[in-house]
Image (tube, rainbow, N blue to C red; front, side, top):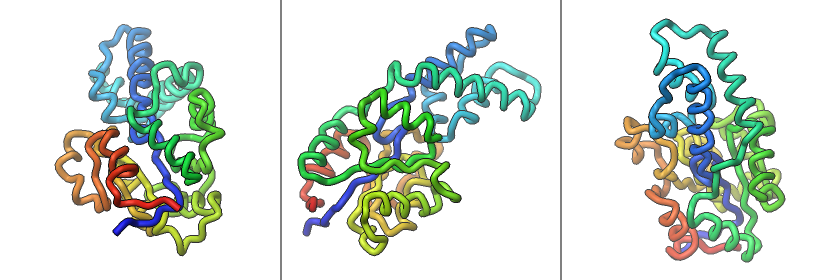
Length: 236
C-alpha cells in the first residue's frame, strides 16, 4: 500500500547537493598558501557534514605537531568561510538523478524544502547560484531556531512554512546523510530516508541500520527510484 506524501524535505550538503569538491578546493588552496600538504580528498569529504571547524582541524592536524589553540582554529575557520563565500559554487552540483526528483515533485505540485545546519547566508547564496532558491518551498537554517538538528524544532518550522500541521508530519518525508538528520526527522514524526551516499565516515558506515531510518539508499539513483518509481509513495 502506498504512503501519501504532501512534501519532501532534504538536508543540503551531502544529500541534495554535492558540495564537497568546493571544500576540497579551498582546503587545498589554504594548504598551498602555508606550504602544507593537503589532506586526502576522501578525508575532507568525510568531514563535510561535521562543518567548517572539522575540515579546518583536519588540515591543521595534518600539518602541525603542536596542539591547536582555539584562537588558531578560529582564525583558520574564518578564512575558510571567507574563501568559501567568495567562490561558493565552482564545482558544487545537485547529485545525479536528484534534479529529476525535484522537477517531478514540482510537476506534481508537491512542495520540497531544505532543513540544514548550514548557516543561512551561505545556504541562500549557494541556492541562488544553483538557481534553486525560488524553487525551494521552505528553507530552515540554524539561525531560524533555538535548537538545531538533531532537535525536531527545525522540522516543525519547515512544516509551518509549508502550512502543514504537525499532526500531518507523517505525510512529509525527510532525507539526510547524518545521524542528526534521522534523529530530527524521527522525533518530528516524519518518515526518514538515509542517504548513505553522503558524507559518512567509514567508522559510521557499519552502523547505519542502527540510526533508525525508515529507508536507506546507497546512491542518488536509488533515492530517485524510491521516491518516484518504487510505488511506495503516492503524492497528494
